[in-house]
Image 1 (cartoon, rainbow, N blue to C red):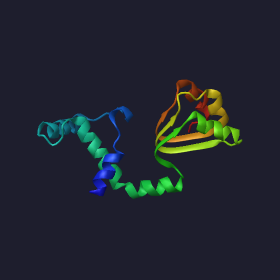
Image 2 (image 1 turned 90 degrees about the horizontal axis):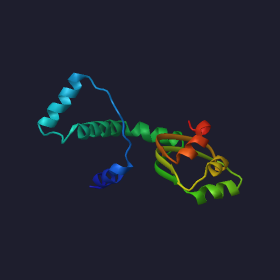
Image 3 (image 1 turned 60 degrees about the vertical axis):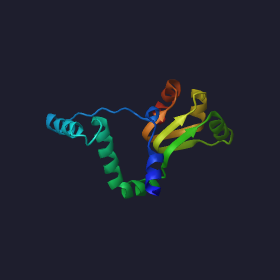
Image 4 (image 1 turned 60 degrees about the horizontal axis):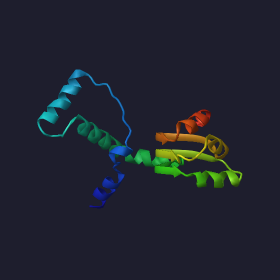
Length: 141
C-alpha cells in the first residue's frame, strides 16, 4: 500500500507535464493500436507512459545512485525572488542541479537571476520567463 501511495504522489498533474514527440515504425505502432483495441490500455499515451514508468522503475537503483553522486535535487525545486535575493545579498551564487522540474519565479528579473545563479543543470524541465532563460542561456547546461 505504501508503494501505491508513493507512486500516486510521484505522478504529475496534466498541467505539470511536458509534451514529447517520438517516432515509431508502423509495426510498433500497429502493435500498440492492437493492445489499445483489445482493452489493455485506454489509448496510445497510456501504454507509452506505462512502458516508460516500467523502464524507469527497472533502473531505479542506477537513478538513485546517480542522483546521489551528482548531488541532484530529485523532484520539484522552486526558486522565488526572495530566495534569489537572499543568495545575492549573501554574496553567493547558486549552482542549480535538478532531476525533475526547476522553476524560477515569474517575478524574478534577468538581472537578479544573473546575480544569484552561477549555473543551471536540469534533467527534465526548466520553467522560467523567456527573459530569465535568455539571460541565463550561457549558464544552462
